[in-house]
Length: 403
Image (tube, rainbow, N blue to C red; front, side):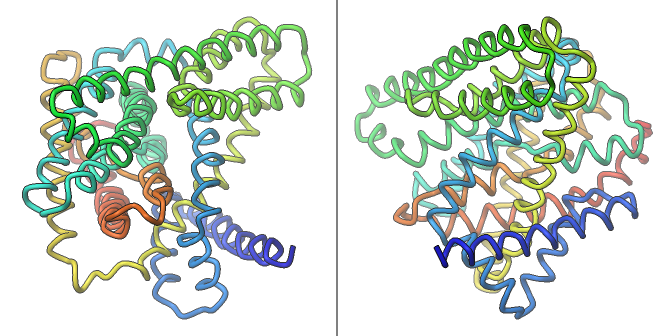
C-alpha cells in the first residue's frame, strides 16, 4: 500500500509540473508538447531527488510499462478519432491512404534495412526500431497549424495519416519484436506466416472495432444524457482495445475503427449538440494529461541516454529516419495530383515522431535483447524530431507561403 502511495505522489508531481508548463506555453502561444520536452530535458539534467525518483520509476518499472500502453493508447487514439470528421478524411483519401498504408510499409522497410546494414543493429532490433519510427505524431504540428491558420486540408492529411499509420506501425512493432526471428528461420513459409499474422492483426482489429462502434452507436440513441454517453465512449475505447488484444488482434486498429464509427455514425444518429461538446471536452482534458506525462518523460529520459558514447549511432539513426520518411512520402504520394510540391515538403518535415513511439519503446519487455539500443535511438530521434523539426515548422510554413 505504501508503495502505491509513493507512486501516486510521484505521478502527481510530474502532472503538476506538466500542467504548469502547458499553462505557460499557452500564454506564450507556443506548442505545449515541445515546451514539455524542453522542460523535461532541463529537469533530466538536474539532480532533484524527487524528479529522479519519479523518472526512474516511470522508465524502469514494468508495471508502468504495462499500463502506459493499455491506458494511454486507447485515450490518445479514441480522442483523435472523435476530432477528425470522416467527410474531411474522405476528401483527402488518396493522400491519407497512400501515406498511411504505402508510406508506413516503405518507411519501415527502408529504416529497418538501413539500421541493419549501416548501424549494425541486430535484425529484430533494427526492424523494431523501424516500426517505432514509422508512426507519426501530429499533436505539436496541429497546434502550430492552428496558431498560424494553415488550411484545413493540411491538418486533415497529417491527422489522418497519423491515425492509420499508428495502427499499422503497432502491428509491425509486435511482429518485429516478437516473431521476426522465428519467421526468418522459416524462410519463404515465414514470409507467408508474417503476412497472415499482419492481416489477422489488422483485419481482426478492424472487425471488432466496427462491431463495437456500431453497438455503442445504437446504445446512445436510447439516451440523451451526456455524462452517461461520455462513460459509453470510454467503455468503447478501452473495451475495443482490450477485447481485440484478448483475441490476439490489433487493439489500436480496433480503437481507431470503433472511434470513427462512434464519432461519425453514432454522432449523427444518437448525439445531441450538448453531448458532442461534452464528449469532446472530456477527452480533450484526459488527452492533455496523458500527453503531458509522455512528453515530459521524453525530456526526462535524457539522463538515461549516453549521448557522448553513442553520438555516431544517434546521428546515423536521425539521418536514416529523415531519409526513410522522405523516400516513403514521395513514393507513396507521387501519383497524387491534389497536393503541391510545397505541401509535400511540409508533410515531410511535419512528420514528427512523438508520444506513441515513446510509449511503445517503453513497453518492450526488460528481457528484449537490444531494449536499451531501441530506447536510446527512439528517444534521440523523438527529441530531434520535436525540438529541431518542431521549432523550425513555423518558419518553414511562412517561407513556403502556406498561410
